[in-house]
Length: 241
Image (tube, rainbow, N blue to C red; front, side):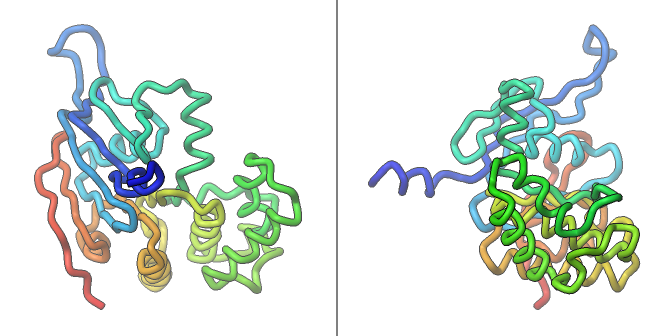
């Protein structure tokens, strides 16, 4: 087996006995947002992490997205231990390997959809023509080929979230993290966004969806429940077609 083949056979995400502790000195003053969490996610999986407010699901997303590091335990992303990297190293990992879709869209107000989607590629050092080509393809992929020059203020919430998805996929990341992606949307727009995520999953993208809503979680092929900083269940789901 060659090195490349072995690398491909590794879990994309491997979390081993991870804790995240907040608070002051002394165990009685600390808050264990994550408490001994272990999980593996393979390439091409669509996983929903579900839990109530305060369950630890957002802390887990921050760790998976390299926005934070664990207090203890190990996190490997594509075989690389990222548990104790510096802020600059984590920033590089995020830019190269992770696409984010947030509840609040996180678009830059004064620039066009095309320019918003281009932004991560600018930080990768891609030429402007290549950035624009990739951004245009990504926007077409989410059904916004006719909105390239529109600013966020000229688009509905559902359209803005589709721009955010385009921004995530244009980087061709190893993983897409979607944090409550339908939380600010009406039912119809939310259904459209979930249909796009489902299509991306069928194309072989790896998606991790963070949600408090079981009906949203049921779109995924695997559901991980988290409560009090621990995984309470982890099971295969058969989404409705």
